[in-house]
Image (cartoon, rainbow, N blue to C red; front, side, top):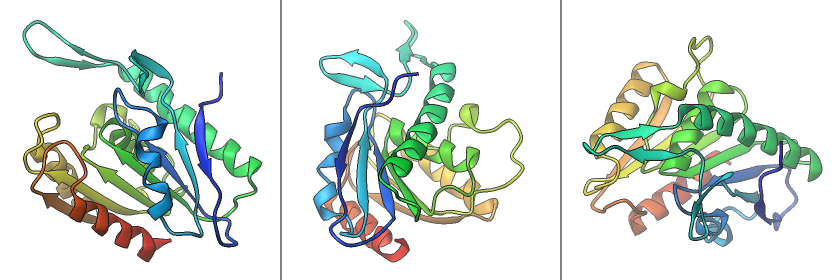
Length: 210
């Protein structure tokens, strides 16, 4: 299995904590890496590139196919493989850079979907997960959830999102709260993107949990 390509920003203060950024469908590791300079200075930042090419310098964690009738099909096998590959890569990077402290995840869209799945598959691995413009995809969660994540979650969505309906995100947050998880959920008046107020709020969340 090939290693995932990544961008890296070393912490500016002594620390063994890190944050891992997972981009959305058709994007690349460069997209969310623009957040790096605004994140807490004690965090080492890794921005991973998804393994599947979408063409035009874009990448995906799993393929998405649209049928003639407009229905959407997700390649669940690729998604499950990506969950495992991301966790393996995080473990390798932590070992390589001697980072034995807290681990945070920040994912947008498809990266958000996989971030939430990672939280369920590896319930004691992440201190916080910031999920932007995504949802909890039941198809890639563990078939039997024996232990719920011991994690702080920040979920947000744009009320005008035309890519992933805001209702999907709301339903996910409600379900996670019913399960007893610690979920901080926000809506913003925007489409499938990060609203400036959202950026400010999730930075505040990261600062309070890192």
